[in-house]
Length: 495
Length: 80
Image 1: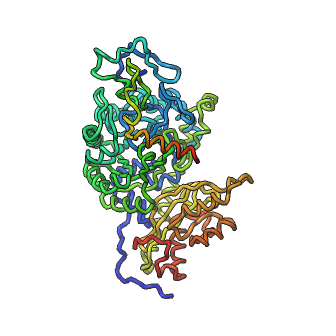
Image 2: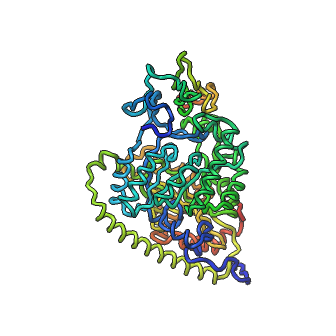
Image 3: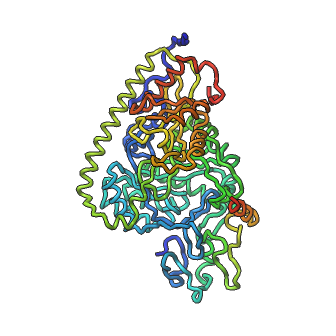
């Protein structure tokens, strides 16, 4: 087969060394000063999330607003339900836990306070934790996320604690829409409802955003995509927050299940499909750096994004640990340096691959989605049946770009107790809908068959290879085999 | 330590796992605030009663979920 050749110069040129060849929109546009600040932050850098870990400490139980997608399931004085759990920590416990995790998981670089309520509605507990950590564990980056209502009065205090990243959840800039998302806020000793409440919240969020930027603090904006409510509006949100200086926008899908007992869950509000989410992220990315690797993690998560090692660090286990933080810090420094060198060399490698790719005749084939099984380090290193999630990449003539992740139910835990394994396997295969290939270190006979029948080509030939290179290699194989000439039924028509 | 609640400090004590309002001392914030502070921040419907024994935040008033809709959803979940 003869591939059509374009004679023009490559469309995408002048790429930066950090993300070249990946056609990655997330970090390309950032100035070097910001890139330096986020390069080892797993939540802010798609690249870093393969290597560095984060943790949250749940020191902030109270909240000052209600969102229709949220149910904290936190035990309140007059309410006791089965399944309601409290993992609330005191600031002292939070400091101990953070240092225990930092010593045990040296690649943990970031400590965030993200709930379960609003950190800034619990200012004493939140700031006590930050104050102590900036003194006792100065090598850990501190982050906080907030709904923004109490943000303006907290900015001064935040700027004192070496917190260089703040996340504000902004779902709208229009009170009409806000009234459909927030049933009430607690403001100046009163509960306020409806449009009036939404207007106050929006004003506080925007004011807080401006004040943080003026202080030189990096601001990321989170938005929950709620189909039919704010989906059309989020491009406007993206434009507004970017114009005020936010550096990253994270559009997340609504999670709404009736069993969560949330308004949206009970009322049958649906979340977006992967396609709808991707289309909106693409639409917003024209205005703004877009974050796509977010795992919407728990308020007490520990470990790499996509994994949770919280069970290893329950308070009783932590009490029994003896931590020499000085020694841990020295070890951490060496390990961080080694990871940084590895990341730099991978970036260099990507850069070289991209240059080679640009020099080659440009394909004119359609884009293809592929799923990848990885546990970090930016390589394909997980067996199909062991994957807890798949990363979805899009390969096109422009290069390879990261799109999203999809969770699976593991059908095989490595033991022989997978009774309903088959139906879980079927669910896993279904979760890869839209993908045309899946790249793993190995794929077993049974899933191989099932994947093929579902039109997804299993591929175990690229174990331990860098993800982007492997995806491009498979894409080229598909092109050479003539599989990309006609639009397949399964393919997204992104053209 | 109350941090976000502005209930007058003499009116509550720290329970084993959470704050408990002392019913004998509760003044319904009269003289301190124009509205009940506990009932203005508590997100749990039906949790707080006034002196007449009425729910200050009856079912549906905070979440916006009509009680019959909630009952329907819960019955549906129990059936599975």
